[in-house]
Image 1: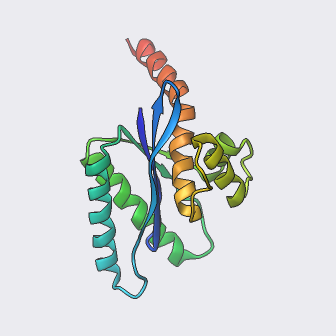
Image 2 (image 1 turned 45 degrees about the horizontal axis):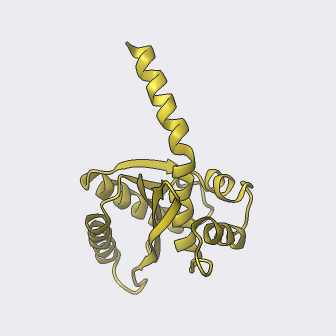
Length: 170
């Protein structure tokens, strides 16, 4: 299975592509898409959309795992994260990938074993789990790789549940 994690954001949108192999998980791409805060919002959204579309076309993931938006006190930040999240999900579906969402706490629990883990702990665990020479930076890139790892950890249970539900529906 090949999973692309997306940590949505308008200024910094993290991405982390992880392939599950028999020998373990391998990072194929980790980085950040940036847009300039000085550019008008519609142009920034178009730029992010084009970059996401290009990334999805290049990588062709089976699944795209997107961080679920949680309530934030800063409405402006929440709106831009929501816009970036919507673009990521729509582009993923258009590219033929399945889309799943995980909360920040689910990701931290799956990767670091603690739903309250801090950014440094997540970066260190992503480094360890993917055998990287150094922790992914910035934190948005590490968070995106953690989303992909979270889905790989949850995928067997999700598949078993889907099979059980299919049997029950017959």
